[in-house]
Length: 257
Image: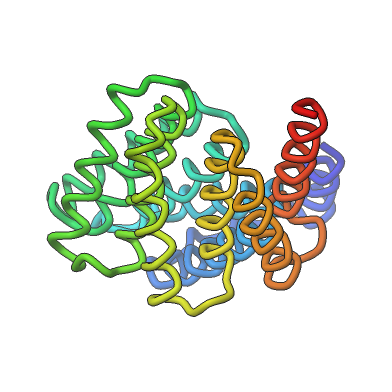
């Protein structure tokens, strides 16, 4: 609010000289800066800052002519941010909009479409709309395996999320091999230490916790925490998740004694 007032006062002092609209190349450059800054802030767990940049990216991409993949990417990333912030209705709306843009500019069988389908599936999974979630996640996985190959990093993301879906429904026999496959893909595609390997370790550790396989669970959860502390900035939400998972395991042990 104070920023808007300062701009208004400056406009009065300056005589409100008209500002020409940006050219298409200027819009494209501005979009690129805003989008990259939004993604970087999101990866660092700075969600409020990321939202501001990504909203700007969506606005600029929507003004580009002709409409292209940049609008779909911006909507998808903003929807993903809202998903992580548990703003599910906003996430669904942005992701459905991205899905429509992908249809217009790329068709239904592209890696971009698969990413948005995957993220929509995640919205429904977290809302416990499991039938809808499974349909979307399986569609995303099938497209990614077909377009990218079975060992691509993004295939690992889809496999991991399908594992989460089954895990949530206590379908642990189905979830475990999916988590293991995701871990193998992430390690092969990205190396032994990164946020995605830590995610797969954490998910396996939580699954073993729920099955009361405590020793195995603790080993994986401690690896996940150590890795997250190493590769993520201090204060990142995923570090807090890992600490919470270990605390839950310890409480479970105490209650069983």
